[in-house]
Image 1 (cartoon, helix red, strand yellow):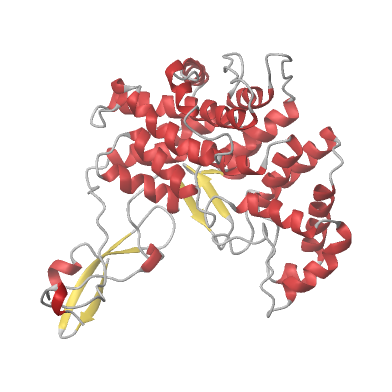
Image 2 (cartoon, rainbow, N blue to C red):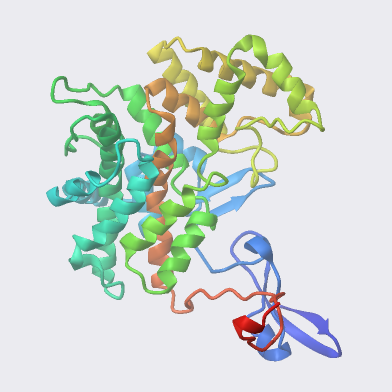
Length: 426
């Protein structure tokens, strides 16, 4: 199948590529060679940069699938470790494969003791995402035996290390910010349990991991594990296309995720709740939201990709209520959140516009209830997304058709002009 376009007097035939699902794609790779012209697509909103078999999204229908499996099934039935294996290898593990995989991950959760010295170079009030960018990138200075991207075995070892060590580094970033000693990981815990243990245990008192909270954290990890070719994933792929080592590529993804337009949504939800202050202030806030002339926005409602509903939100909603019930916390901000949820699900203004609470709305509430500070929210997002980034990086390196990223531009600057000596310039 092909499509024809007319460029001035020239007819150009473009191949139409079909995926297993989703819209067809025009192959424009030969367009410049045939016509001397590029395509112009700021933000790459109409451009496929690669072929991928990892994640499929249909925003209009509210579909998110990892390797073909609906996110609802994975979040409800699978563990995060199973999801990691699935994203990395393409299939769900057998019981034996799962046992071997989790054993390997547990063996890699500790970080080199010298890495602890890196933290002393940061101020105590440094944002934990700044620490994550630096320390994750620094892993390449410690693990020289997994830097050869052309060696499939070394790529696999690098993936294991990233999956296992990023949660440890994330917890260390938190401990450093509050002046507490680092907690070592435990091999008898899964990734979610281990993260909570490393966040909240101290030498004075061990932290008893609640199964409800561990399951909630496991679901947060799973629901944020991958989301197709978003800004941070594309950053990882672009960095990786140059041949950069995997630790540097993941650090680049973390830096991209740090941007408030990408990874700061659940933090923005909590900031909005704090701005509202109390349930009594909600009606006035909602009126401002409905006023087209007012810049007030309702954070955590609706989604740029999902035009109907966020398939992750219902799972997070159920999880949110489970966590709040178990903890029984009394927090005015959580009361505000629950009232906002009720209004959004019942008010015709929000229902008609499909402004339903999204996954970020509920995950922010869950983490606040757990006692996780707001500046750690994006860190946990990065922790969750590491497996997605790593899977895309590995897929890209193994793709013979992949080339170093080199976007084109439409130049609108000055044309050629001659240098004028500084004494003669006016």
